[in-house]
Amino acid sequence: MKNALTLIIPYRKRQLAFYSFYNWLINSSNESQNLPDIIFIESDKTPSLGVQEKIEEIGLKYFFIHNDGVFHKTSLLNHGLNLVKTKYLMAYDIDLIPYKNSLLLHLELAKTAPLFLITGYRLMVQQSFIDHEDNLDLIIQQATISPEDQPSALKKHLTSHEKFGVLPLFRTEELHKIGGWDENFVGWGGEDQDIIQRYCQEGYNLCRVPDLVYLHLNHQHNSDWYSREIINKNREYYYQKYNHNGSNS
Image 1 (cartoon, helix red, strand yellow):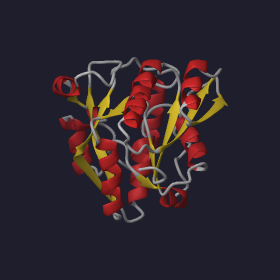
Image 2 (cartoon, one colour; image 1 turned 180 degrees about the vertical axis):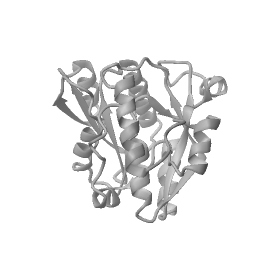
Image 3 (cartoon, helix red, strand yellow; image 1 turned 60 degrees about the vertical axis):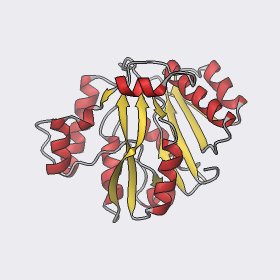
Image 4 (cartoon, rainbow, N blue to C red; image 1 turned 45 degrees about the vertical axis):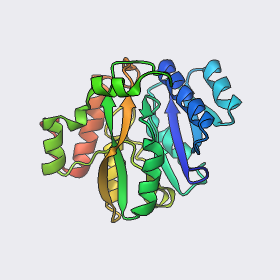
């Protein structure tokens, strides 16, 4: 995987998720798995020194962008996009942990399917922190289906052509062609569907693969980027942009 894939990770105040991801990285490295390049971008009032130290001690790229307002994820992703040197990239959420070899398989499938945008699934787990010694098989059996796979959301995917997939693996060159992420999405919601939709308009087909499973850690939402007002504003912008009927969203 080395030198083929970059993970861009925007971050703010998700310490338990960060340490779960960090443990996954260390364990994967100890098992001699090829790890992706990682661009870690924290945006807050001040840097999280413990997080910064952990990132830098294992040789990952850490960046800090001061922001005491709403978390602007799309801006951070575009900042990261301009730093990527690999053929493929993924906008990676820190609260997701790959189940077994999902990340490696994700890249291999993308390499063999050049006309497809390969995405996975997430399962909502009860735990806020996962250690590499935890029984992942038991955790996955106790997990629940994610919101985007509930009947009402699935119907929108099938009938309104809304596109959603977990951790789409993009070709870096193609993302540059479409101008990266739309920075009119500020805070939580809509930016992931938008980037998939715009990418697929360039001739790609969305493919969700059930063998690609990511465990979504349980956590509280940060009110400074996940409020009803922010969500509604982003959803309204998304539906206006694509003329979707969002009345059932």
